[in-house]
Length: 391
Image 1 (cartoon, rainbow, N blue to C red):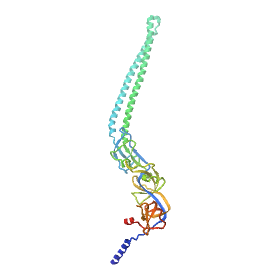
Image 2: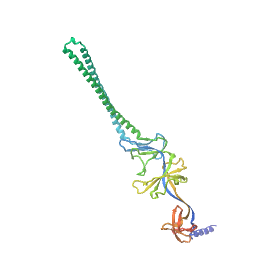
Image 3: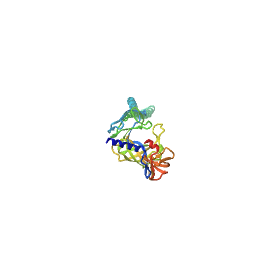
Image 4: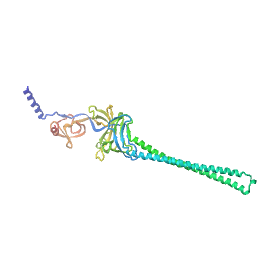
């Protein structure tokens, strides 16, 4: 038994050594031209947590939730440095107290000045009453000179009363104006203090609803925000994505400009589940290519693909490979790539007889190429010398 098995083994080796390879046949059929793009899952809709406006404009991140962490409504997602704001609150509180004191002092001064003017008005009214009483004495009982003096006293006290009343009105209006100026200063100081206190609260970013935290990526550095980074007003520090709006955001090299357009079908494979391909469709392609990283020489178009049949397990940030169906060619002559030598120009095909013929090739996929000229349907090929050497 052992001798018989040993005798069989050399027979198989001799067949392999003889170089008897199965012929490769030119056939007619359909070829799908596909283009592979890579990207990751993102949410088309999300609630952004924006950095607030501060006096110092830029503010550092003091604490940041982990990317991908689950949060409940009201949980702290990020804490921004509030040291500068805390330092100003004491000064603003003193400014409010000082403005309140100045307003109270102004009110007291106005009250005293108005009281003096009212006293002067009452004094002149009494003087006028006396003068008018003296003027009622019959002229026959007085000398002409005394009678004229009494009449002059009435006119004089009336003028003095009118002047006192004018002074009182001026004092009241001036006092109200000064009080209004002081009150405006107090209100302004209070608003600044309230604004500073609101900034303290605003510098703590909280989740508006339950969900996952997605930390913002800095496109010019190609990394996520982290503790110590400086952010400015309006920048999204993190997002709470809507998991029902997951799409694929991929990159298309600028050398493939125009090959991918909206509406094309694609097969998407999430790296976490390679055995569960998902059907996709191209939603949009950015009109302008941009740098992948700051000062990079490579440029990419942004491609957004819609997924069909995705589940709740899909999460933003997962890597995805999308095989986009660029074109489908029906009824074409197809040659196996193993029978081609594409290192030359034009390419060559090796017939089963060993003869090399020049061929004109069209689109290719991973296994076959469209033959435009040089071969006929049914032609048998064999692997060229390079493929045989590689084998």
